[in-house]
Image (cartoon, rainbow, N blue to C red):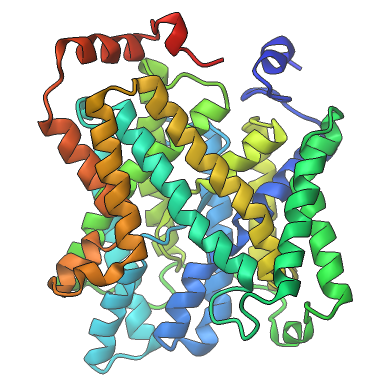
Length: 468
């Protein structure tokens, strides 16, 4: 192992450029897939259900998995300037849901059927992806905007906003008839406790397998008590083949504008996710190497979203939950991403395999993702702390997180706003990110705060401010 000493010192079992063996890579990859699988397919299931796409949904789910595999390969492999070179999993973005549904309803209101709806959605998303591609080339010029306090706040909001998803799953999942039933809470608790126990073992293989062991134990127990139903697998097709722009290519400016704006926001979200990934992978979070990773990663997000639209899937983004998997397993090797990519493509090509994983009970998944999302939030807190907890930074963080969580808790606060504006700032992440950026830009730095910021960017923090 190339960086054994460094990895041991940093609590990583395998560093970024290490190449674990086949069994270790497969175990680690499966845990990433299990952590992100529901996130990859859920936006497609929501869009399909709300817009009434019916029989097209299974095909769209398969395409989402295939595109996630392709995007993960590009992001980790780094092809030319495209890709961060980190162990990042690409998946379908939830941020676009409201705008994509709005686009679908525009077409549906004009009498369009499923083919016309999908033609417009994928056409608009394809063209809008070039907004993020263009922005990626100048992301390093936004140093005054994308500061540690901004990225730390965004990462913290990502983790905190996702915890609601975990808790809903722990209770049984959205709309579940037995929401909050003791059996659901017991299943989630079993998974959570199993992961914690195995994560604390000093034996590397047991630590590497903590998430997959926890999910497996939960799945087996859930199956034994009748919480798993495989009957729906009878209707799953044998194989799914990608067909570029299968539904055609259409454009609508009213649908284009809000989606293009969301691409601007996801560029910042990706910046936060890649910063968190760099931290847990023990890579620089400042300097030229870091900037090149961010530029390549955001560019890959845009390119992968364009590929996604071409292959009939929704826009892509860098998933944050996988940063939690890296921290739990101690495996940051980008070599593992190649295994993840292969598994995702396989799941997409053979829908029955993904169909089995789709039966994973929500409480079982929630027990695992609660730890992962909480870990992501703490990575953001760590960045904020390293930036310096002065009055200015605390004010920016407090207002931004307060607004983000406030909108999530009381969405009715925006009920009187125009629908177009509500679609843009109605997301906790969007309003929190915009708040952090604006406040960071307009609030002046005092002399002492400038010194702290300069020390943060050069890595010359005082001893008492450094974290081990």
